[in-house]
Length: 284
Ligand code: SAM
Picture 1 (cartoon, helix red, strand yellow):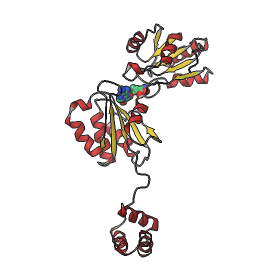
Picture 2 (cartoon, rainbow, N blue to C red; picture 1 turned 120 degrees about the horizontal axis):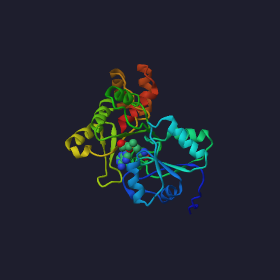
Picture 3 (cartoon, protein in one colour; picture 1 turned 90 degrees about the vertical axis):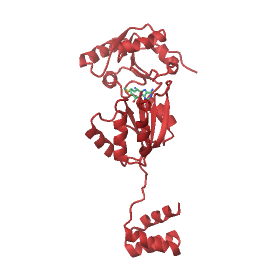
Picture 4 (cartoon, helix red, strand yellow; picture 1 turned 45 degrees about the vertical axis):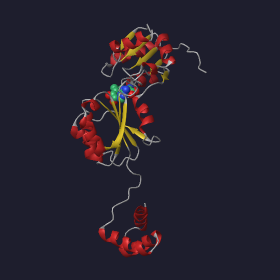
């Protein structure tokens, strides 16, 4: 059951499709028809969308480079009783898209900010990637500059939650190359390309295999991307020195894992728990 849309002076944050027009929600169309004004990132781009859905509402432009007087103007209109829908070129506004300053100012002014949910590339990708989805970190676009990008990735090396990035076609190869350099060949990655569109592809592999796969065919580098990297192991089996390894191996030939770990700890001074974990990993 959906409540009928009631007009009120409010800022509506309206999600639009990320490719497939069939993903536009009925509520989004109703709201866009009802409001006094639509603030759009690119009025020409959004004009085509509005035409498709028969929305005749007046549009004005709003983007991250809009100066403060533009924000003042929109807040003034809202305070004066008008209702405004904010849309971006695709997906959910504010998710790597304009709108943050406007939402902050509207909330500070006591103007209701009403979300109208819909498509979003990050949640769409996560829902189908087959990587842990209970906890994740959205990093937006990695830095465009290599040194900064490598530093950003290095800071995430031990992050155990699934990592999610947005990437453009002209940087996807550099991005995957740098992911490979920092996270190594074995880390799992899923590349979601052109979601909801004709050439949608969701390809998962290790970073070591993904890089040549991407280089093999230029078509695989075209379109819009969400890159998901599996988080680090929660409790990585730490390295033991060679002596401790050897002692543990010999004891494991004669004793249970628990006994061997306890005895090896007494002989080598290495923590029992670490030796026990290592002994268990030998059994896998
Ligand atoms: N606000 C949007 C959202 O809700 O996902 C994101 C806007 S951001 C400027 C554009 C980036 O989102 C693209 O460069 C790409 O990384 C990702 N993206 C958007 N649409 C996509 C799609 N259909 N398939 C894969 N990635 C997409």
